[in-house]
Every structure is written in C-alpha cells, then in structure tokens.
Length: 323
Image 1 (cartoon, rainbow, N blue to C red):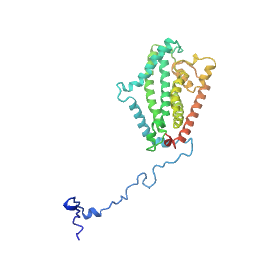
Image 2: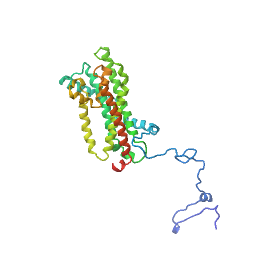
Image 3: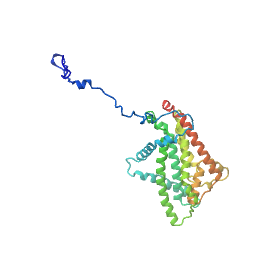
Image 4: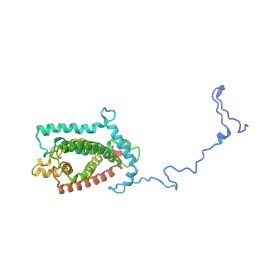
C-alpha cells in the first residue's frame, strides 16, 4: 500500500488516458468557514440589516425607506436625462429648443392669425411660460403612467421601493424645467430692460410651490392610471388622447380672462388652471389669484396624490402576475 506522501495515479485503459496527481494535503484539505466573517445581510451582532415586510396600510409611505434608496433615485434620474438625448447632435439644447419652437408656432397661429390677446404680456413670455409649465405637467404625468408597464422586467427581478421610479421621473423632469426656466429669465430680463408692460410681484416666491403642486398632481394621476393599465391597456391610449384635450381646457395658449360666464367657472374646476394663473400673476402681473379656486386645487391635488399612493401600494403586490 502506497503512503499518503506518494501520488495517486489513475490511468486509462490500454495505456491511454490521463494522469491526475494529488498529495495528501490536497486530498485531506477541507473548506473551513471563517468564523470571524460577517454573514451577508447581518450586522456585527448578527441582526438583519434589511427587513422587507408587506405593507399593512394602503396609505403607507415609508419616507425612511425611500431616503435609503436616494442614490438609486439619482441614478435613475441621470439615466433618464442621458438616454433622452443620447447620440443627438444638439444634446441638452433640445430642452430649450422644444418649448421655443412651440412658442414660435403658438405666436404665429394663436397670436397673429387667431388674434387671441395676452393681456399685454409679450407673446414670447406668455407662450413660453405656459408651455414650460404644461410640458412639466405632461411629461411627469406620462412618465408616471408608464411606471408598471415599462419597468415590469426590472420590478420582477429585484426589490426596491417602486415609488422611487416616479420620484426619479419627477427629478429628471424638474431638471429640464429649470433649464427652460433659466431661458425664460433671459427673455424676462430683456423685456424688463425695454420696459415692457410686465409687473412682477411678491408671489414670485411661490414658484417652487407651483412646481410642487404640478408635480404632485401629475404624479398622483399618473400612478393611478399606471395601476389601472396593468389590466386595462386601452386606458393608456385613451389618456394619451385625453392629455391633448386637457391642454386646451387649460389657459396655456390663452388668458383666463378670455373665457366668460359659466365657462369660466368650469375652467376653475380644472386643477391646473389655478397654478397656471398664479404663475402669470407672479411674473407678469396679469391674470388673477382666486384664493378659493387655488385652495380647492391644492386640496384636490393632495387628495389625488394620496389616493394614487393607496392604489399604487395595492397593485404593486400583484402587478407582476398581471403584466
């Protein structure tokens, strides 16, 4: 019998085959666990660092968990900004050119041909400001509607708070809107120098609240539609058509003062009307502030936002089986 120090040889039949050699140390060596190593997912005391629990309440909004994934939100936002204009010649300039071209078209069609007044506000400021706010609302609403359908593959593979996706869309759309706002300020400064009939007021300080108002409203509507389209796909096509009609029911291309009688009351039922008028009153001195309509719009926005969270939380548990 050979000693363990010798090699063990195995040969194939007829002198053909292969030879494998192993020493005693190689044979008897065993994998020993590192007792000092920390188990994956546990802290120094052996407690789990992350615990995933089912949501007990429909209106549950775990801000601590969302804040924990803030790096993921920023990563998603950067991805969205980079992929939109990746491999384009003008790149981020499209953030400015799109509303600028739209402003030119609106000026020619509605300002010159249709002769719709702007309450003395220069056409460029009137249409560019309205287009900027509406594009932010429309983009956030459209992106939120696609939360489940577009990210179904990602949601089915790894866990992270699903609300991080519409929040990241809110952030990326906000970046585009701020770039457009800086462009608007260039035009604004020019018209102030030439003493155009614009009168800025203290309400300018409410501009961040206007953006927050539009963001919550569009996100609330968007995640409601996203939850419903997991079963009813045709609702997505209906909403695409409805958003286009919604713009004409909002004072984007015309001042609210151009609407008279009962139609004006109906316009105030549109929750986007109040923040749009507040913006024009703040920066241009035109339009009006209806505190009742503004308060009703804010209350409706908060209700839609939390209703959207409730429906979103209910559907995120089972949407993977439906999509």
